[in-house]
Length: 264
Image (tube, rainbow, N blue to C red; front, side):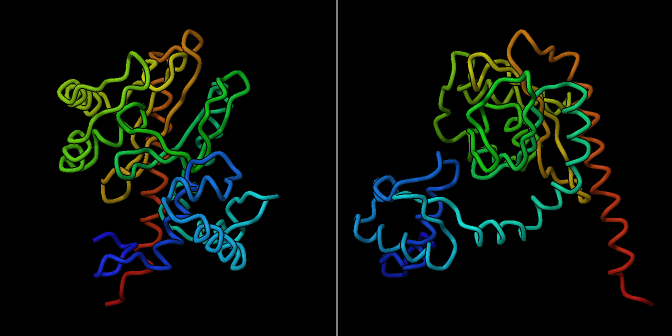
């Protein structure tokens, strides 16, 4: 049963609100009421009424006749523990890599077969990708996504590969067996490449960031225009930076644990 529905199948008010808010995830802002009604399948009158209520409580803001996420939604987002701790651990290391290379530097997590970009530092000489913080991208078609799949639970990989893999460019890996072989290479090298698989003129490299318990938390990446970035030269820098973020998270955990441990 979808959490947006009651046991009898009727969609709840909270479910409708959640459905509407999800339409702002990765969308071009602001979003019109008509677009919300069309993408959610809700009656237009219902969508308009829910949008007005979400504006009233501060979850959305009105921009002319359209809408965008409100301040309350941003404030609540800052309370989400994992991305915030990742930001704190990764920010300074990403800034150093960004300054040294001049390329786009990104930090992404994975959810439901997609990568979610939680931080993007754009390089002046790097391509202007149609991706932004909070934006999503198919995991199989990006270096960050392949890293997250390679080091994630095998059952999750099985679920992802059970669905049709969308071809975004002629180089996108869409054959499940070929992608499994690619993920095995990623596990051995601890680095994944995007060789014009997500965009025709963009290449990239990503490496995993692990939490204190050894599970993969995120992927740190560099991307640039094909022909202007040498992947074999920057992959070591990406691996080193991802390792530095992993160690930063381990140090934070080691500081917290003695404080939380009960006295004997």
